[in-house]
Image (cartoon, rainbow, N blue to C red):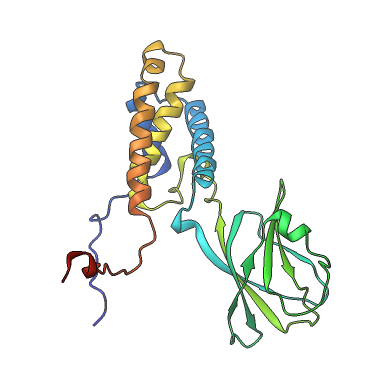
Length: 233
């Protein structure tokens, strides 16, 4: 038996304009001109960058395969990559998965021979201004023998221009995005009344983000086993 169909209209949706209008109303700002939408769009993109710095947003985690080539020390990751979270090596046929240990910059550069050949067992992420690079050690000595499966954190998709479309975030984060945008708009407002709302809007934003991020955490099964020796049982 397949999943039950969801009738139209039961799941709320918010496009970019609606999010901007709601945030402006909270900030006490008139939202009418085209420039107001451009200004709000800039603030939304700054909020997206802020969220990437704050930690792990599970909906922006995906896996990409990186085929390994002989004597290649580092591999460019897609431009929207924030960081590589986990890397494993598989045989070309998809078998024999082996997780790699992560090295920091100091550990990686302390390696005596960073070009030594062999099957990679360590990875290091070199994060530059415009792109991140995956560095592996030892360096693969064969073409197409292995594939690196990279679990990465990516940036959210750019905010659509003109207010068309929706943001790249789940519904549970929409309240936090609206609250954050209201705070940003109040800081840029020319009206004194809107600027005075900024501290309160900031507190609401932080509370909304904390609530959403706690709900978005990764979950795993666990068992609590009491220590019976302490009660003499």
